[in-house]
Image (cartoon, rainbow, N blue to C red):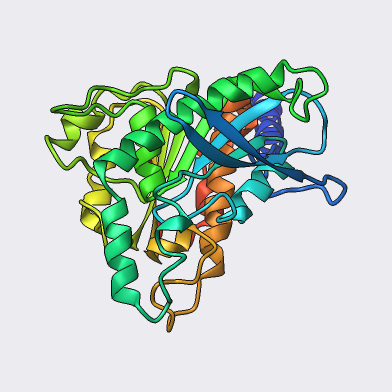
Length: 336
């Protein structure tokens, strides 16, 4: 009798184990890189008129194919960039169902260098360094608020191309380099001295690429009370030729200073500063690693899906083995 019961128990246990083994791991069926071939995005170029600052802010909007309200991602370019750069991000995120708004910041955009011949490289670098000043930083911060205000108006304007297309209760923001500094400023970073805090409450998640530590005060003071989810992306060779705290060591100091809860960091092995854009690499002799963009797209999409869509499958992927499935062996991934 005992032998029969033991055999029945053993068979049941084996069946249960086989059943559990056949089940997909949490997040296994989720793929942040999947894009339907039938899903097409479109773009719209517009200008936001900031009357308070007498400022014209060009924007490019990547619209998902489905004409319904969708979460919004703002993107801020680096020093000397424009709304036309890093299109690989906007195209992918829009194809995943997000409305993506690329801001162009006058005074720290392509106007800084476009009238200087390419062969005068030192003059270009000097102009770029000069443009990365406190005045332009403050203007960038105000640009974010001005654009969000205008998006709210357009979302309610009958017959406008953005009417009803924007879910402005679900807004994320990303940016590279000077754009990362802009993102950090409006998403919880605290400043010392003449600056206060520029937090834009409408933004609920942030993804700074090539982040920066503060010039004044400690990283803990600057980032210790960030309350919204942040995903940081940098590389082991992420150094810029201008700007304060623009070396890889400074960028790596941000993550340890962030509080617990919804905080992530990706460090791509041998990724340099331009690896996060679609511009030519600064070290032109080195080939671009195609897996860098693949990793950036996968992790960023899972992050947006987790915090802007509250997608549990995306969260399981992000918190499980999903990230390692797209990263290379020497890439570093951590969360807290």
